[in-house]
Amino acid sequence: MEIKKIESIIEAILFTMGDSVEASRIAKVIEQDTATTKKIIRNMMIRYEEEDRGIRILELEDSYQMCTKKEMYEYLIQIAKQPRRYHLTDVVLETLSIIAYKQPVTRLEIEKIRGVKSDHAVNKLIEYDLITEVGRLDAPGRPILFGTTEEFLRRFSVQSVDELPKIAPEKMEDFKAEVEDEMQLKLDLE
Image (cartoon, rainbow, N blue to C red):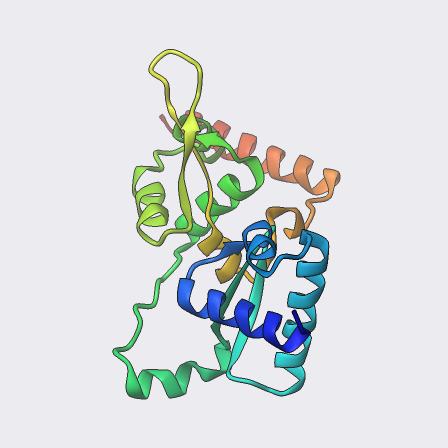
């Protein structure tokens, strides 16, 4: 198959599916190995950027998804119903950070780290499709384990959680000390 035909097939698959599609599945359809398929898609991604197209291809771990460029949002809302905007409060963002860095994590572990109930924040994150249930802990009560979703990767423009900024060990010690001080203050007030 010639490259133009292969690219057309990939484009049709990504456009039609809407959601992300694993590179291995695309490779089977175009009868190429996964490494070659990834190279073809990356070349398409570069060309889309160079041509300043209104669409782009996102890489999400070992999957790809076609989407509209962020810069086109203002034009889209003139045609389409305005998409819902989510407001991430400090509490919700703090909870999301804990889940992103500690995943898979239970609600109890989140609450232990935050020092307060986190039901509302966890429910909001599920509603926003930024986290999801990824399993159950093999412990009494079988608590739910939470992890981030592909939507999280899209919203924060990262290919995988490995791309999240690393927290320096000395900064972690500062955070721990801050939390311990807050917990002690809370106990003193009670």
